[in-house]
Image (cartoon, rainbow, N blue to C red; front, top):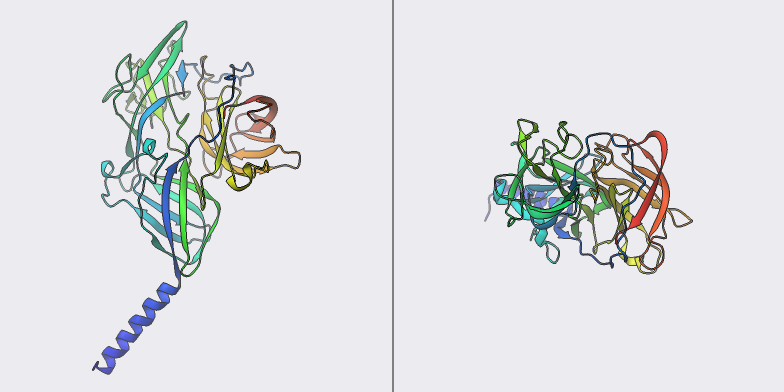
Length: 384
């Protein structure tokens, strides 16, 4: 028989555990790449003549990098809310940069995390934080791929290689890049409400196209910075400046994850002014009935067939907001350099009739940090 004091302690512990259990649900994180679920536009769009004014030294470059491997460290994933609620739903067991590398190129048909259900405190969460490093202050990621770059009348195929700048007509190898941002914060598609004993699978979807680029060193004496080269996430870094001995360099960014409960969104991709790729995500439940409820998206730089105009579209950011108007067009605004800064690019008349069967190009106007107070025209073409 238990002594009275011990019995009371056991009862308090049991009540405490029961109360804790009643206040929690569970969340299982998944990380998966988006499959291409729409046919490409035919014919292939031709270059556009409406460009933003060049603001930095042009370089020959390409964001059409054919990737073989794209490995980033995922150290932890956290749910947070504007009300201060917090819960960690994933932590890499190996707890090192190399031990936590995840090859995003392998996630198009499977979950990359293989994570278990994690107890989460009751509450409403509206943001997610993905951590790539902790107290180290930077992280290293690995990229392997190749790209074709035209310089003048000559086109060369450049491939990544281990420990150096990309080489021409060689077999690709893994190259290591360094980035200094340890935490990437994204809005959830909809607030995640965790209730007692609820069970939720939260999926993180991503797209890798146009996320990395290769460029040749500028033909003029001005270094290719800040147009296409950065001291973070690019090869050819010499104490924070571009190493001019590198005739070609590779840069890469961190993907904009779209976090949602449910199946993968439908994605459409557009080319704006031959300078940026806009990706839009749609609700799969009504997309095929032409309702096309927009869920979110991203903007990424695009370097195509001609020398790009410097930093005119120098960003890789998620959309801050997007909605569909009664006439079928879309209103959206991209993030700025930070979540609190002005939008890089926003439009109130993005055409909603761009599809693969009839209309593949159209025009509109944009404002934002790129244009100041000026309203600028753009030409947009549907890629997918």
